[in-house]
Every structure is written in structure tokens, then in C-alpha cells.
Length: 242
Ligand code: IPE
Ligand code: IPE
Ligand code: MG
Image (cartoon, rainbow, N blue to C red; front, side):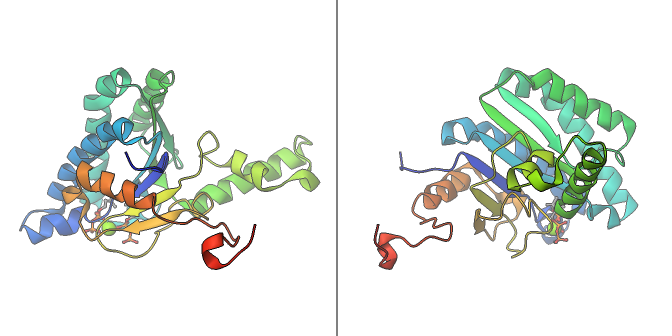
């Protein structure tokens, strides 16, 4: 097995709509196929050495889409949670949701909380699902809570550092992603984990999400092992000395 596969990986699952339209199908057919890929990629994680997988499922900007598409996506989230809960629990997956829950329908919020509670004891894989997630929104919500805590005397403003900010984010319980993958060929981050991915490696792949396979996932993880991560330092390969 290659030396250095990442343990913490995040994926921007993009291209469902285009996948469907290219086949003369409605966009929602692409989202349905996308759910199958989620199942396959989640199942592949433990064998590939992935400990935390963060999936971008719905952004704070995705509400701009036609009402029918948003409703179809919400329907698919309900179906996914209902159909997969038992398997996730049995397969050692701990599920956590990140993003602002308030605007989601009450029944979805209840299902999310139920799945988190049901899988909380699991340790094989942590699956963070970003649902109504926006990085700027997350940072703004964190800032609001920090300001409140400071006003209440529970947080010393002079003691605020990077670790403090991290601890107020939705992702507080998880390590930052070492690698972020985006499918469908788009070269942008679309408000996904701006704080957490500040030093992540990126892999942009041309395949649309419904065509993304576990095999390709494994190949990308292997390629990650060949990258030199410098974190601002110089290494021997660049002529640096120890
Ligand atoms: C990603 O696929 C799924 C969500 C954003 C919910 P898209 O729906 O963005 O597919 P394209 O980018 O339009 O092809
Ligand atoms: C990002 O994809 C959001 C998700 C994958 C859930 P989008 O398709 O919404 O992003 P843009 O609009 O192309 O930037
Ligand atoms: Mg898209």
C-alpha cells in the first residue's frame, strides 16, 4: 500500500445536473444517481484509510435553485437518511451534520438529529455531511456566538486565537481535511470549508459526481501521497537546509 494516504478528505460532489442533461434526463435523475455514489464512496473509506469524510450535499446558495429541484433534493436527503441509517450504524460510521439547520424542514432536522444520536458511538469512519452549509455563514455564526460569550464574560477577547475560532465552527469535533476533491471540472471552492481547507491539497477531476468511482477515489488518494506539503516552509528538495 502506498505510504501516505490522507485520513481526512472532503468532497464537493458536483456535476449531477450536467450528468443527467447530457443523457437527456431531468436534473433530478443525476441527483438520484449521485446518492448511489455517496453510498459507494462511504463504503470504500475504511479500506482506503479514510477516517473522516466530509461531503458537500447542499450549500447555503443552493436555495436559489428552482423550487422543484430544491424539494427533490430535500426528498432525497430524507430517503437517504431513512434507507441508510441502519447500514451506517452497523458499518461503524459516525454521522455528523454541518451547516445551519434552522431553515431546513422540522422533520429533516429531527431525522438528522436522530441519525447523529444513533451513530454517535461509532469510530470506524466519521461522515460529516454539509447540509445548508456555507463557509462564510459558518464563520459568521461562530463570530456571533463568540461575541455573545465575550459579552457574558465566558470568553476573554484577548485570549482568542486560531484554536478558539476552530472550536466555535460546526467542524469543531473533526480534523481539517488534508485533501479536497471536486468533481465535474469546475475550478472553485463554492464556499466550502474556507477556514478548514486553508492548507488543504486540492484535486479537481473532470468526471461528474455520478460517474465518480471508488477506484478513482483510491487513485486520487494514492496521488496525494506523492505531493510535498510545505506549509510555508522550505524543504530539502527546494534547496533548503535543515
Ligand atoms: C451537485 O450537482 C449537487 C448539488 C449542488 C446539490 P449540481 O446539481 O450542481 O450539478 P451541475 O453542477 O449543475 O451539473
Ligand atoms: C457546490 O456546487 C455545492 C455542492 C456540491 C453541494 P454548486 O454546483 O452549487 O456550485 P457552483 O454554483 O457551481 O459554484
Ligand atoms: Mg454544480
